[in-house]
Image (cartoon, rainbow over all chains, first blue to last red; front, side, top):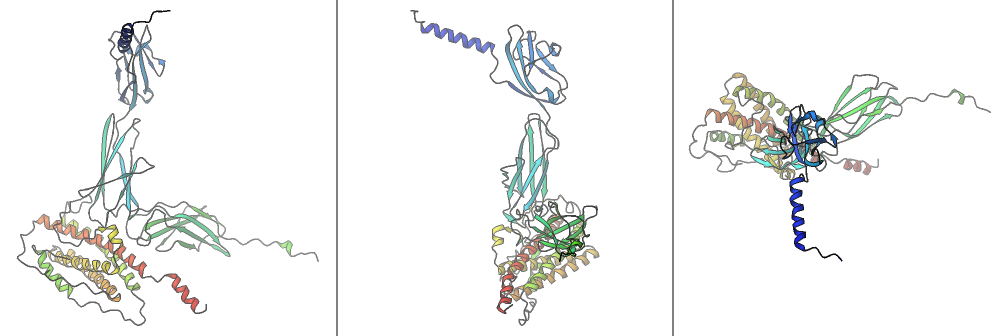
Length: 315
Length: 225
């Protein structure tokens, strides 16, 4: 039977283990570092002396000693491929001394911001993006001012670069100013746009555009569509429509502007030719035309060729 | 609406009261009456015509005022010193306006705006500007008459000026040149916005006045068709 180890001995052992661990183990979490694409960086091996004997690895692969300056790793002309987990080890004991998670990226350029009302008079939305990628995480901050009043821009539930503003008042003479700032670990940038309530109105394209041949009419096509479902109040805010059509074999479009209704009959189609038809929408008085709808295809009615054999019948 | 009398606009208020007392457009002949529909359509069409006319007039006038008024980014704070009728309205309030109120607000707004425009015309420096402004004022007078016609057809009384809107006391200190130009800027902006609003107002009225298609069908069925 072994004698029980006195608790004092356990305490001393535990303390020694902690001290040892603190002096020889690296941080649990690697040090995160962001550096600019194209720049040079020197990574020291934690607190090691300059002349300490160390080996560096990136993502588990050894790095050549000619990249070292003493115990420091020197990287010239950083490329995206340089991003990774760098670790330096004590050369003889292979003891892990320091880890750096390096991210190579760029500071943000001026963001591109645009706002649009496809749900007039309910509200409008603004969306943004960076013209070139930064390769590292960015945070965006949007503010909306109506005169001196700050308005809330609610984040879109699905798209992370879009937010929505509800109109409280209509027919305002005061402009809206939307500002956005973007920042990341390497820098920041901002931009703003100012506009009148009416200028950003642009409906979504008409939906469910269907083109059908008209029986017994070889030069007609009947086109029907629906007002976009996002337009909240077509009664008080009626839309007008613009229809364009052409046979697939030609490049030139024919245009018709329609101030009312959601059907139109084309009467000058070339017989037997397949047509492509699109419709766009616009508020009757304000804003701009929507994008073109999804195209509908149709070929006008053609007469069935008569079968001569039906004339000769067996008696 | 209530006009403040402490500045030179007060003098114009005097002129405005003259306008109120102009003979109203006589009511439409009731026999064979097609209803107010055609005159609502005509009023709507007039707002579109005026809005189009205003675009070139405003461009010319703002150039006459010079920078910064003619710069597209010009975005001054609205100090509210002017007594212009404002088109801006809460969305729900606008939706729920009854026909009478909707028409009255339009009529009163254009009456005041016409008055101010006539004042502008008097001060305008070039003959070309005076001509354009005069032409626009005539068209705007036509719009007022058209709105009055719709109101009469629907049996609504034309708004009368409230007692006490005549100028009382001396006009206040004259505006600086810059502030006068700001007033002109806001007048044109408010006019443009009112014309956009009126188009929407008259759209709404048009839809309400239209006899539903079902009623026409029932009428035919009743005659055995």
